[in-house]
Image 1 (cartoon, helix red, strand yellow):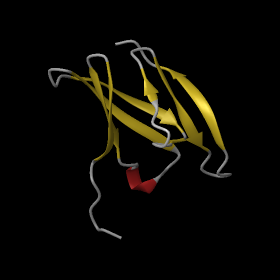
Image 2 (cartoon, helix red, strand yellow; image 1 turned 30 degrees about the horizontal axis):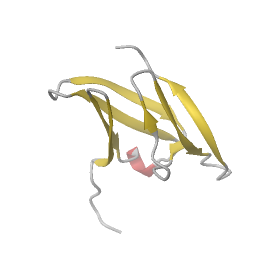
Image 3 (cartoon, helix red, strand yellow; image 1 turned 120 degrees about the vertical axis):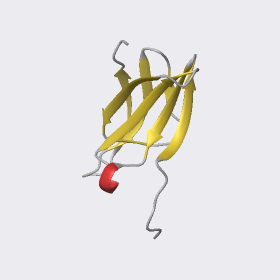
Length: 88
């Protein structure tokens, strides 16, 4: 395995926002972390979701919700989850 991993795993867009998915901290898949930036590069928010959000199929992101498939880290069971996002 490589000794260095990329800081960003995936990039998603929603309107004028770009969602940068971080590499799991300490390879801990129990949460998924995104940094959200505006189209001009201004940092807007950090969003922490419970569970391992899968990239296949890609999550659907809007200004108010994120929907995707989440895998339970202890059982491996997958389920579709919808998360309401904090208002900025």
